[in-house]
Length: 319
Image (tube, rainbow, N blue to C red; front, side, top):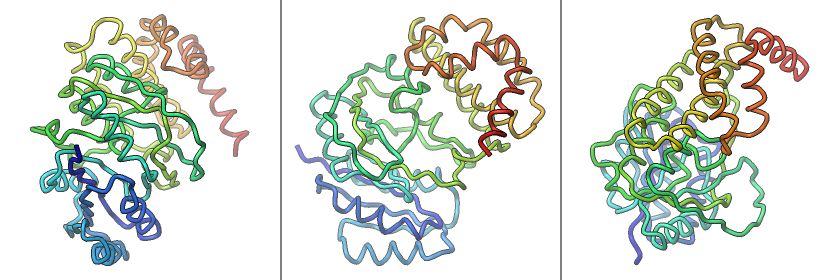
């Protein structure tokens, strides 16, 4: 089979990175693609770069729209996509040359609905053999909030377009991937995961995920609350315990950023400490959390104030 893959690229003021991204998509070893470039009201040269690229590659379509945000751009791309399969690429990142081919083969080989891969912020490629894992719906969802694995990001995955029936990215919200990826996985029966670095993720200081504490982080907490609440009726006890451990890790990260920024979040601190005291057994037994985070959680459970002082001291030494 050689199904059409629609590659959707939301774009806003990324002129320094956009040409590299477009060329990486054009040079994929999997050739049956359409490239949908969504210019979300850019005020730099991004729109012009899109138009010039479309002149060179007949597979490219450019949509110029009023600025509406990342979710709005992805939703426009989904609506106009002609392919049976969808891929989302962030315009300041790029896929490795074989990404779409490897994910497509994994999808077919396992009769899966979603194929995921690893990613890296290193441009150089460290060669390694593909290691493949297959998860049914519940197990895949239980791992969404792990440190290990494919995470909730939109861009390191290949999807059956049919999964998006009645699902949209939430507009006007930050950390939109978390809720949407959970909803998509809830529609999927089988998810395959290639443990190989097939996507380059650029770390930018101004990016939301790399930023210090912001009030926008509240959207992240709301999103993981949504996942945990809606997963109750999908997961068995073991799977839900694993998801809860990841949920606590996300919440912990929110608290750490707030502590460093001297934000008053006493209610959240009390909530997390109570939750940890109740769930610490599940947390310590979770293979998806690294040892460092488990140690931090134990210390936080004993004394949030001591944890806060140690965190600030560590942060001060790093400056």
